[in-house]
Amino acid sequence: MFTDSVELTVSSGKGGQGCVAFRREKFVVNGGPNGGDGGKGGDIWFKCDNNTHTLSHFQKKMHIKADNGVQGEGSNMAGKSGAKKVIIVPPGTQIIDADTEEVIFDMLIDGQEEKFIEGGKGGLGNVHFKSSTNQRPTYAQPGEKGQTRKIKLDLKLIADVGLVGFPNVGKSTLISTVSNARPEIANYEFTTLTPKLGQVNIGDFESFIMADIPGIIGGAHEGKGLGIEFLRHIERTKILLYMVDLGSYRNLQEQIETLKHEIASFSEKLGESKYAIALTRADVVPVEEMDTLVNDFLKLLGLEATKSSKLDFDETMPYFIQDNADATLGFDKTLPYFVAPISSAANKNIEALKHALFNLVQVDRQ
Image 1 (cartoon, helix red, strand yellow):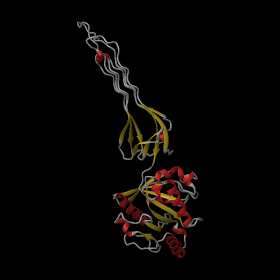
Image 2 (image 1 turned 90 degrees about the horizontal axis):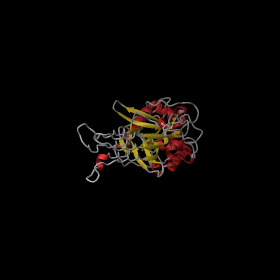
Image 3 (image 1 turned 90 degrees about the vertical axis):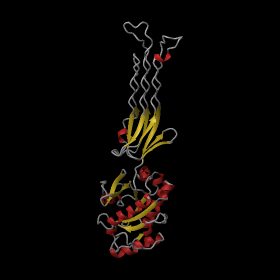
């Protein structure tokens, strides 16, 4: 089960109590105090681990505690410190204070470790309290209490490219075609119920990460449909691929305007991201209609069809691409990097799409 938000209470360990003890040995007269200190309570740590991708394992662990320190013993023997508690979270997890909504840590890198709260100090044994006026102290310190905090864990997936489109537009088919992701694919809306990540390989040594979220409908930013619940999973992506369905009963203008409005309404920053447009289901449009349909859509966006010597889009279909985008950061972000018809089922323009997206990812990484 995919879980992307949980609330937890975490507590560090209590310090062990100091010991009251006196030296008692044969031939040693009136031995002095030798009570050892209590052990320190265990700390709470967070660790980022690539081997986990959901927060579902926290569902039945609503209160996580570190170990308490052990009481000190005689002969100046300190108690054992409590073991620290390491809480494993997937990359992209934010640790948020439940009361103030402050983001305490943003766990992004595999292996990243952060100490959250300290365990309580161990109490001092009675050996620390001897003096010229009190040579037989009969008290020791109790250990300090640990701290308790209420927190929220909020998972936001990390990807290079986020897929945005209406339900049943072909997002799952595309990500299953170009990556190692295997989402459910069916001929009905809202097939995708949870976000999916896939690694798209470009040759043997290059790759980027693609994220698929449930379909967005009009009013998603107000809570309609499933999209709003998972839109946060593309907040970290800097590149969006809007998928517009050539075979839909919705016209192309309605689709792109609705999608862009919902994204901008959810997050102004996300609405200003670099983007491209894929016109899906190109295999269902008759060849003689493709030119008119795509060219009319490009004119709607204020664009004209172009040809590219760098990317191998099918030249029998009209498309647009900003050729300078892979060479400079100064290309026009208000316009799509490319607009191209594709078909995942018929494998039309899929390889060119992968390389075009990789070019845009490379620009963003510079």
